Image (cartoon, rainbow, N blue to C red; front, top):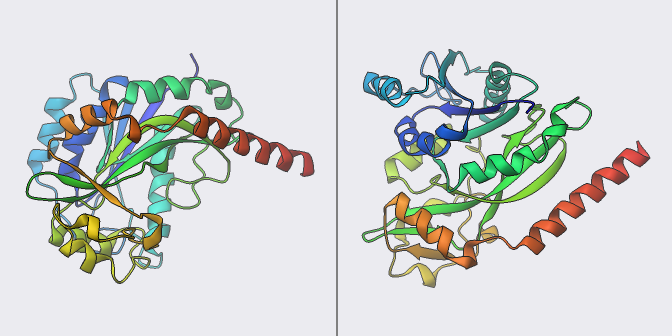
Length: 292
């Protein structure tokens, strides 16, 4: 079998979430690379700290010696936050090695079934040969966790496409490359927004989208709860109308939520939708090749 399954994390101020995310990918990864700014700077130049107990947890958890901690200077004052993000992702990908599947996951992303994602990825191993000539990016679907409430978690009611893997990590915007997208029927819980108000404000100041956040987002996020969420609409932090509605998990336990997702068919992405998405991408890039 050609190519390894290389998983990479960008670790910063939300490092504690890695304790939930890493176990979801560990068994089926050949190696896990953890990128941390050596000066503890965010992409916006903000400062963060990591308790030494976190590294001790990694040493204890890493029973198969798969984890590589990669520390470097990832903050450049003359670059935007998104430019810093892309730069770090490329530097991390170089450490992970060409000729492998490069899978980048954030600390706040939890695969429901990573083994299945790897199985789907392996169907495209031929693309690991001469990847520069045939760059592809492999998509899964987020279930976006929106906000913790008294009795559970609010979430965006429809799965959202997200890119996780590529054979050629020439990133252009976040994890996106310039290449064909291949959709797979895999779900990833994304805890991007379900944080304390303090943590969310800090994230908005320091992440790759810091200049893009909708001005009315936080006001709505603060007032929405499990009792009134049906009275509101348009929840996306960049372009509000892209997330029309919220729904509710009546538990805060991530393992229990995974079970709900596996059993609740309305959160599944239909085979027909995936087929047509993939056919459209195949046709688009076939025509590009013919006109090139």
